[in-house]
Length: 58
Ligand SMILES: [Zn+2]
Image (cartoon, rainbow, N blue to C red):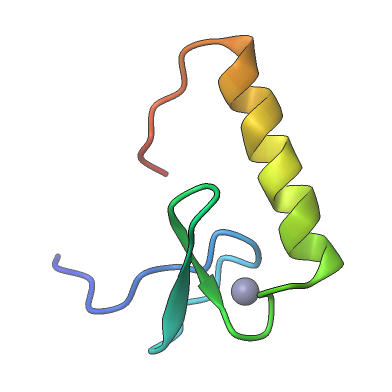
C-alpha cells in the first residue's frame, strides 16, 4: 500500500531517485528532467490548473 517510490510526472515511471520540479512541485526522473517532454508536461499541467479546480493527487 505504501509506495516506496514516487512516480515521475512526465513518463510515469517509478524511479528510486527523483528530483522535485520546483515549478509544479512534482517528482521528475533524471531522464525526463530538462527534456522537452518535461516542458510539455508542465505546460499541460498549468493549463489544467488554469481551467479550474484540479485535485493535486494523481
Ligand atoms: Zn520520467
